[in-house]
Length: 75
Image 1: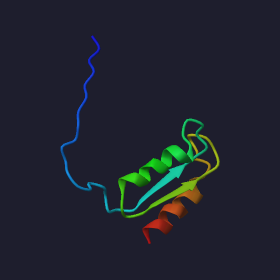
Image 2 (image 1 turned 90 degrees about the horizontal axis):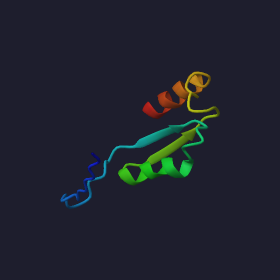
Image 3 (image 1 turned 90 degrees about the vertical axis):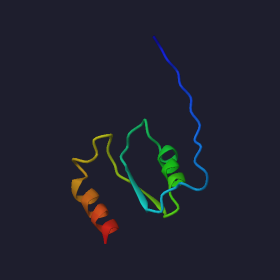
C-alpha cells in the first residue's frame, strides 16, 4: 500500500538558523553547485561552498586539503 501525506508548517516568522553553514562538494555528478547552494536559504549567518576534485568519495584522496579547509573555518 502506498500512502502519501502532505503537511504545512504552521510556524510563523523566520525560522532559519543564524549559524554559518559550510558545504563541501566533490565531483559527484548527481550534485551540482546549484543544488548545494540551496543550503544558503536555511541560514542568515552566511554560507560558503568549497569544491574538491574527485567523485563522491573525494574524502580519501583530498583528506589533507579537506582537513585544512575545515580547520581554517573553525578558527
